[in-house]
View 1: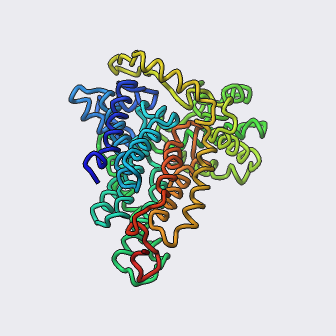
View 2: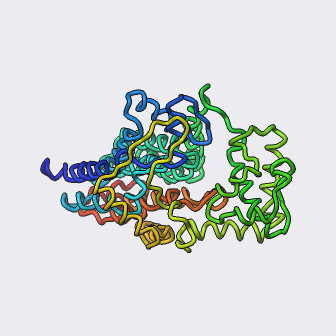
View 3: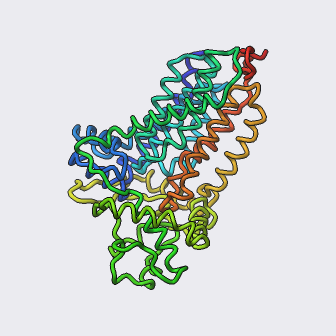
Length: 457
C-alpha cells in the first residue's frame, strides 16, 4: 500500500479536527463543565464527577490555555480514534477517508463533540480501545492489547459507569490472549469470566485512585440526587411524601412537588431547595443507611409508580417522545458562567452560526432518536453472532455491541435525566459496527475460533 493510501484516514481526521475547532472553539460549557473548570482553576475537586478530567484541565489552565485546550484534546481523541480504527479495516483508501468523515460528521456525534463533557473522552476511549484491538486482529502483538487496556482505563477515569461498557471488551481481550497463548486448548469460559472480573476490579480500582487525593472532597452519597428524584416521582402517585425523615423540608407540599417534577430531568425538583441531597450537605452514616434503605424499597413497596417512572425516563431517553424532552437535554450550545471563572468569548463565526442552527434543527428528528441506534446495535450484534465461529473481527464486533448495550443498561435504574449525551458511545458503536463487519478480502484476516486451527484459507 502506498504512503498516501496509508495516510488517507489520518488526513481525513486532520481535516475533521480542523473543521471542528474552527466551528466550535473554545467549546460549550454547561453547568457541569463550568463546575469542573472552576474546580480545575482552584485545584479543589469533588468525587461527584471523576476528578481526573478536572485534574488534567488544571494542567491546561496553568498554561493559560483555558477550555479551548480541553475542546482540542477531546476533538483530537475523537478524530484520532476514528482514524486509528479505519486505518486497520480492509477498505479502499478513499473509503477509509470517507468513513472517517461520515462517522465523525454524523450530526448526533458531531453535535455532542463541542460540549466539554466527560462523556466525550469516555466514548473516545472506547473507540481507541476498539481500534487497537482491531489492529491486533490483523497483526497480533501484546502492544496492541496493552494499549487497548490503557484506553479502557482512560475511559473509566472519565466516567464512574464506564466500567460497565469496558467489561465486554475486557472479556474479549482476555479470551484473545488465551487463544493466542493456548491455541490447542478449548475455551473454558468460567475461567475467562473470573479473569475478566479480576481485571475489571483492578481497572476500576486504578480509575478510583485520583479520587483519593487530598484535594478531592468525598461526597457521602452521590446517588442521593437520583434516590430523592425517584421518591419525588412516586410521592404524587401515592398521594403522600415518601421521603425518609430529615430529607425534605417540612413545608414541602405535594402540589409543589407536582409543579417542580420533570419526568426527563431531576434538577428541577431541587430548585426550591426543599429536598436535601448530599452535594450540598454531608450525610452521617445513619442518614446514608436510611436513604439507601428507602430507595431500595421503592420497587418493592411502590412497584407501579416506581417502574412507571423508570419506564417513562427510558422512553424519553431513547427518543420515544422527543417533543417531551427539552432541547437543552440534547444539545446545550452556550457558555455557563460560574463563580470566578473568567468570561469566555463564545464562537460567533459564520461557520458556527450556520452549523449549530442546522444541528439544533435536527434535535427532534431520527438523528437524535436513541432507540434507532439501539436497534441498529442489536441487529448488527445478531449478524456478528452468526459469523462468530470463523471470523475473528466479527467476535470483536460482537464485543463492541455488548459494550455499547452494557454501557446504557445501568441507566434504567441509575440515570437522573434523559440527556442524550449518555448515549454517545451507543451512537458511535452503531455507526462503527457496519465497518467492523465489513467482509475481508485478505485470507489472513479471517481466523477460526476452533482450538488447534489458526487460520481459514
